[in-house]
Length: 280
Image 1 (tube, rainbow, N blue to C red):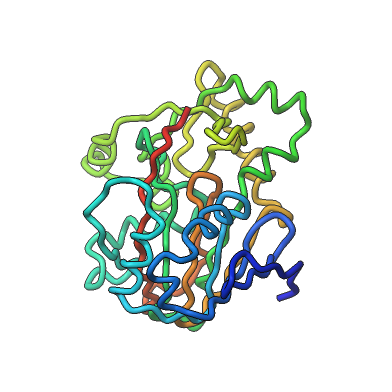
Image 2: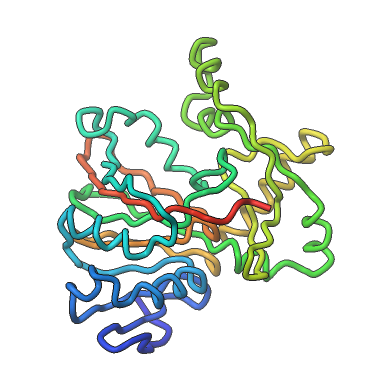
């Protein structure tokens, strides 16, 4: 991959920007210092600025990944755990829901406060496919014409769990649909104004329709904005190597997995960094 520039964020930490608008690769010379939080401030800053931070072939253990995740958290949370991301029901009892990861989404749109970031490491790879793509929704918003920005800032979007699940199972049984509907709709701003003053688009597979707008017009606008935000200039595609660790700012990116064989055995370990900023 062609890199853009190299900088040094802190002693012992080398940063390589992978595209102009999104993703920085980090090389650390002291893994123990990383795990103990020596670079936490720099990493959180990079996440907001660049959306994605990737550590190639870091090869952390479960305990090391958990410890590292704790250093990036700013909230009082004690329930840290590793979640296995796999389509194998023996590895993950919720494997059917993982299939939704093949479509652009933001984690936590059904919540008032989404998670800040996810930390994912590769433990077993598919022989084909299985990249993870990320879209910088800060950069996508910034690149819109000013008159469109003003118009979009007035809009509210209704997010529904069932809307995302219909991508995977377009003809669910009534029982399945009612189960999905146990999770109530959540109305969010289309443009999220963050505490920092920066703004990002809130899109993805859970986005059902825009309040006060006709269904067809809503779908057209949401689809156009998704296409806009997932243009090559706003996207980074991570080709996983065994032992990679990737962190993404869930509050300013969308992500999706590219298709891979369902029986490939692909296995990722995910930890999460709690959010402390509500959608407003």
